[in-house]
Length: 251
Image (tube, rainbow, N blue to C red):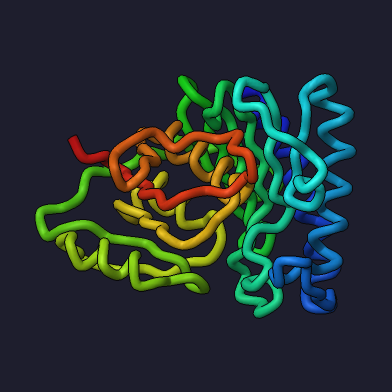
């Protein structure tokens, strides 16, 4: 958990820099058409500097420079998304996050998700559980997944990327409630027992999911492919396939 707490401290500094330009940062488009803002780039630099200082010797892959890195699934490395939910940032709804995760042997084993506009952090580490706290000096509180109630699952899905495949999956479940949320906050809702399942069939990248998966699995949940296989990292193009984040995994 020490490394996850280190990630949290770095993420908070990055979050402060993001909030300094919140509401004023203009956006541009990357080569793939996705938006990028000054906040993405500022947070990227802050995080790289913090990791170089506190986690020297561990390779770092960030969304903003991943095109220049070739993954090795056997490698121990840190995955960074300095600003997940850029569309949420641009629309100013507060549902964007800073994400840092440690990958070992293809698995996210420690991570932090920080929502600077909401002032909330979540951390998790394999074998050490998951916690949340308010930003600043608030105490950490343990969190854990729940089992669904008798009336069915509460599902959480993307606010910006809900698609037909996700809707088809939900149609096959007994859904007692539905929540929409941006960024990696969806993992955190399941991790703290506010929702039961997070299905995602649309395109995501590894840095979008690694920290959230680390928190969710440390809280007792699982992230699986639709076929029930483990969700792995270090793929050739950093691109994820479909996944389902469960609070109480089937079987």
